[in-house]
Length: 162
Image (cartoon, rainbow, N blue to C red; front, side, top):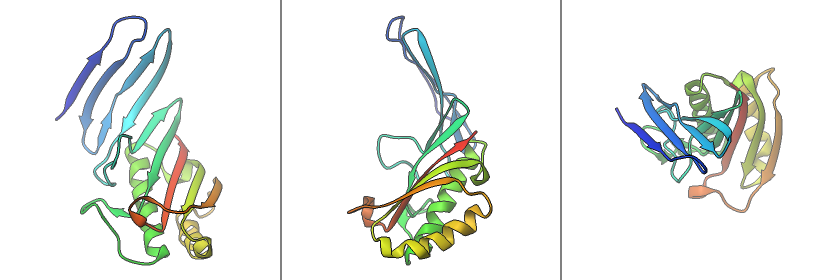
């Protein structure tokens, strides 16, 4: 069970305490000067590990900010085979797992951003998206991008109430 502790003195002070809980890495607090920002770093093995220098999600100020998820199978860290529907489903399952690890759910999502490589796949993505959110209708932006990590078709990030 990893436990970390990093502290600096006054002025530009950083305090980092990490304790692993089953499926969650929690209790990370960052302080800068006299003002304080309290952040919980969220980590779960039920979603793909971050493939860069970022967290799966951060809980701060009563909100959860989930990093963009791509269609990686968390067990294999490989891209799922299939069309935009299959990829969108995997992305949303990953986000659901991250949100649950943060103590919230898709029902509490207030904003999403969907990144598509091809906007002609919007309708198919939207069908799967609607099946996950149902009557919960968070604000959303959908944009077409030139390319996504590992050449996937879709990436989605969310902001939710904690």
